[in-house]
Length: 599
Image 1 (cartoon, helix red, strand yellow):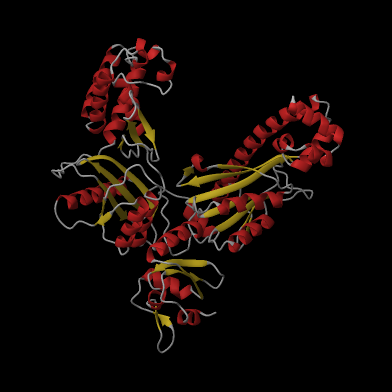
Image 2: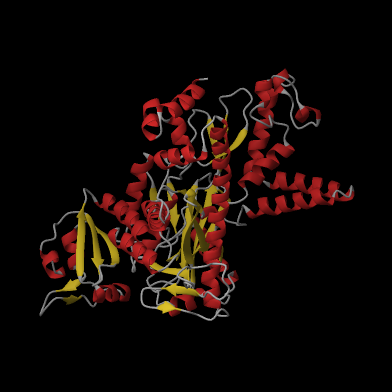
């Protein structure tokens, strides 16, 4: 169906719309309160269908490439906003921006329904009537908590009260031993009150830490003095210095997004009881498709995507944006309380958003540009996006045993090890194993958005497999593969004369071994291989141990292999019934295994 025909049949209901190019690649996802009106606003219909020249350059460029239009109807504009945000994360359309700022921040909390409560960290809501939260603390929350326990003789560990006996903490004067009733509830509560004030007004903490640091330095305990010095800096950095006084104990979350030439910055300030208690900054890659409305929508929906321990009723934004009211409605429904998103025009609140913008510009100014290889990679391999975030895949096994897959992540010029993933695989052949890894990764795109590039350790067959899986899921993502050329009909990783060949959408590359672009791709491949091998070795050791235990029961290696081929894992063998084992092997083997498990 042509775009014109689709437009003529659009309903006047809320929903999302998707534009595709001639290769069925997704170009853009948008949301609408009224699909018919919204989509028609992109076009002019006389003398024939053509783009509306009043649209932004980004939209005009997108429409020039569009040959197909799809849409999904939903119940309300709020539902459309949520679906739009979810699909942008999953499908990574070419003309939408994607912010990767989905961290959840820790809070310090205390449950004062207990006789001798403790301060603890949490990233989720804790149920209880007497819960008090402090934060969020994007950085330094753990240091602040540890410092509280260093300076105040509170119950140091959860297990302390259960023991019912004074321990080492009491002897070194870090606890008053309520477990032996050496302190009353009232006296302990006074300590709690002092600690609560210290968390909010951190000058006291910094003063005490400085005194202690000097004592350590005088005593030549330099390592401990250095640790305290670093802790002081961390606690000081929690707060952006500001002379702004709201003259009332108000709670506010403040957001500012500033787009620079190469990078953009998201700044968050958290004001509690009239004081800015913590701040956070994160950067994103700027591009010609930047859209302020999309940026604020994503930043707010992502940050408030879960039931965070504390959300301010008033959220300040440094720039007004189109969907401001709709986002406020979504958050109000999500957290069951009235939430307003405000772009202040005057007064002290304008000073707060100005402070956030000032800090964003400072981050951009201090972000020194460096020579990057990623644009050269994009140019050489004719990629649709510069690969600032890359996922590389490999698998490992030995004669079909302990088959595993691995994914490593390169982000903004360094390894992002927290995003590495390991996969225990069932498939027996390399093609099936890669299909299994990539399918599982695609299924997780809603939670962890796709990167700019996939690199596969393998040849053109595996690259085509990845493209097929992505096309079926309607996801825009470049894929390249790297493999050793075949010598003697085999690809030998260890043979020095074998060259690495890179397969892309348009070409096959055999680059010089001195080429920095080849070395960059090799580095990605080698890290994935290292990570896969380490996981394989761990699983192999575990399986060898389990294999050894089975053989001690009088079951030979051939039978073990037969059982593994049938059940897949040792755990499945262990959980199998008598009849299942009889079918897979024999009643004799079933009797040995089942009798042993009963014992």
